[in-house]
Amino acid sequence: MFILKRQDVEIKSFQHPSKDQKIPILTYQGQTFRLLSVFSAVQEEEARALWRDLTDNRGKACVLLEEPERFSIWGKVRLEPTELQAATPSVSQLSPAFIQAGLLILQALYEDIEDLLGARQAHLFERDLAAAGSELQLPQADSSQAIQLLLRLDPLYGQLPTWQEADLNQLLKALYRIAKTYFGNAAFTGRALEALEELSTNNRILFMKWLSQSPNAEYWQ
Image (cartoon, rainbow, N blue to C red):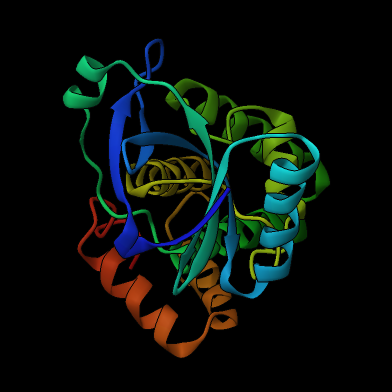
């Protein structure tokens, strides 16, 4: 339907009717769209292929939004004028590099537990994380199946979860709390952060700066 740039659109957040979470809503020329899928900058062809499939083959009204660090696909929805007016400006969508960092930390902790404590403890860690994700209603991290997908996902090239800043903060808090019960101390944080070496130097610096100013700064040092 449309291929747009960030400056062409307005993105606001809308309260989910039944969950305690915000839904990003894109507005363009009086039309509203809900986020369907997010791709990293290197996944341009995949993003365009899915967008064409949705629009040409499935008859969906979709927007492909091009940004410097990602591509995202948005599907058309209908909101009442009063609902749209109640929507609040959304904090910019979390940088894909930050989501990649969160996934690298998650996978490093799992691998550390499996290597040092064994497969059974790693499975229990996976179960505990799924329970925490369910309680916190973390998108795409709220069930055992979802956690397994995150553990198998390639953080640098796979399709990333559509997390916002609050989601990543909750995940990092849960990871610290749960991992500490397995290791007995906080020494694991340094080893987990070493996984960020897979990011580019610039992205790693940006993430660590964000982390140092986040509510989890005292835990992840």
